[in-house]
Image (cartoon, rainbow, N blue to C red):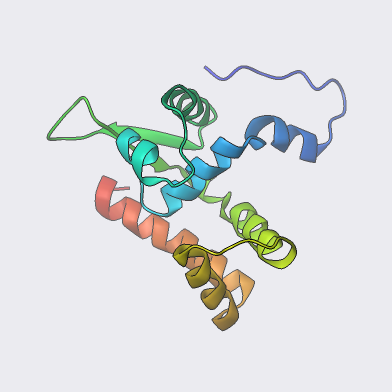
Length: 148
C-alpha cells in the first residue's frame, strides 16, 4: 500500500513530483521500460547504468506501489515477473523526453547509439509527434505482449 506523504495545506507540485520520482534509478527504470526491457534480469544486466540488485528491488516495489508500473507473471515460468508501464507511467514520457533534450542541449557527453537515434528522430519530427510516437508504440507493444 502506498504511504501517504503529508504536505500540509499547500504543496509545490514540483516538490511532490521529485519526492515520488526524483532519484536517478526511478527514471532510468521508466526509460528502460519504454525501451522494451521488462524483466528483473534485463534491468540488471542490459541497462548500461549498472543498478545494484537491492536498489532495483526497492525501485520496482516503489513504482508498483505508486501505480506507475505493474507486472504479470510469465506464463511459462511463474517465478518470472514481466513488468510494464501503466497508463500513469506512460504519461511520464514527456518528462523523460524533456530531460533528454535538456542534456543534449546543455551537457557535453559522448552519445550512445540510442541517443544518436533519438537526436535524429527529434530533427525529423516535432516534439508532440515524437512524444506521441513513443507513447503510442509502447501502448501497442503492451497490448501485444500483455493483452491490454
